[in-house]
Image 1 (spheres, rainbow, N blue to C red):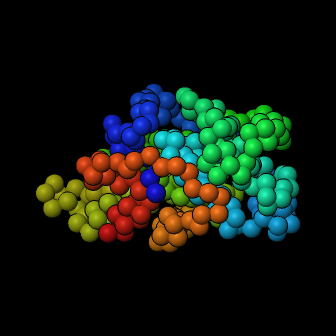
Image 2: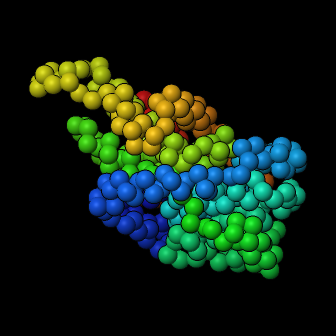
Image 3: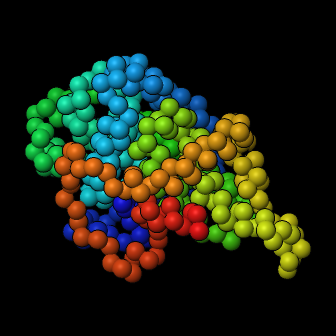
Length: 316
């Protein structure tokens, strides 16, 4: 399931997806990073297990999984950046951690979360009429508008959430100082795809976004860093090459989280990747969004943008 476009690519019939230039003045500034770290706790769900504590087990993790994949397919069909999906999932979890809903209202809530997330972070909104269409006309435009007000009021109109995607570039900009011959754009795209996978899985929703982002970037870098350990020191320069532990040390000092927690998060992400076949083939409970035509074969070979591609290449 593709959630990203290849560099310079576009979906047929869709407007081109644009990415802002990664300004080093912003992403290498410790003040910006510290502000994100200070604010991220504020946007965590109020309950660490809202399924039992708030929803009285009427909503179960597999239901969240099904609706999250429906949301991800909409983001793919609408050519959204992965941060839109992650932001919408944040709204979903925050709402469910404070407000009990019926099973029949879950898709309605998910559609509203996507609607608001697109308004907050995307240059073009997602019309309510399209969400009705994507639901196989199970939803009603008037209900979507009413629930939009409900979502905003329950979250105190504070929709500028700090999510894991916000930390990915900060981590890459600092880890790339290690003398490695890797492509930052490729690492970025792998990492963002892993962040989207983590957002879709209920076991990560209560973790700090900075921890999830760190785990995703390090999981992406792990094969490369472990390969350098095999030939350490470099046979040509006789200099010691960076290791995985060097990268973990950098991240630990960045986000002020114990190394053990970072390593545990990486293990959980790798388990998620191994089971990604289940994630890439969700049951069609909520209806299937209309898909645009696939990328050209040439573009598909350039960058592993699909979840299964990431899974396979991360463990080859």
